[in-house]
View 1 (cartoon, helix red, strand yellow):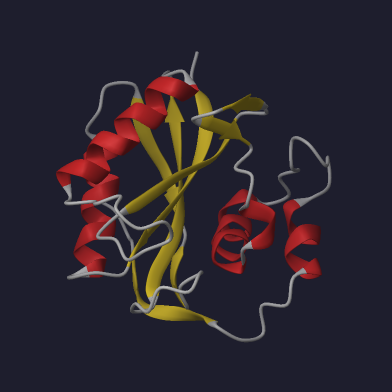
View 2: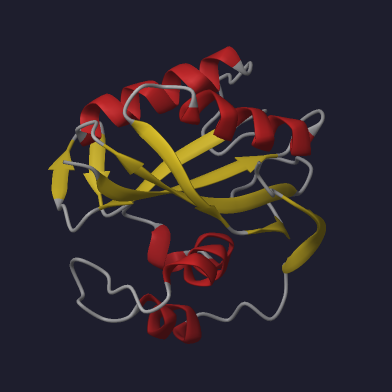
Length: 168
C-alpha cells in the first residue's frame, strides 16, 4: 500500500533549477514512486561556515510503495547521477534530497531518521512544506507544522523564487 512521503530538494551549484527538476524526474522515474505535489521554490542562505552561493529549495510530496530505507537509497542514487559530491559537510551541492516525512513513521537509525531531525529548525524546509501539507501534524511533537513554522524567525534570508517547479 502506498504512503505519502515529503522530500526536501535543494541546489546551489550550476543550473540549480535544472537540477531541481532533474532530481524530481529521477525519483519519479522509479517504480513505486508517484509525484503528488510540488511547492514553490525559495532562495535561502547556506547553513554553516563554508562560503558558497545561496540555495534554491523546495519540497515535493510523493506516493510510494518503497520502504523508507529503499526510498532513501533511491534518493542518494538520484543525487549521485546529478553529480552530488559529499566531500564537505554542509558544503555546496548540485542536488540535495532529504527525506523529511514518510507517513507517520518514526525511525532512528544511523543512516535514516524520520522525521528528519533538523526539519523543524529550517525555514527553507518548513515554509515550502507547509505550503503543500495543509494541516499536517509532526509525528513526534503532534503539533501542526504551521505552528512550528510560526515559532521560527523567517523574516530574513528566505524569499520566494520567480520560477516554479510545475510538473506535467
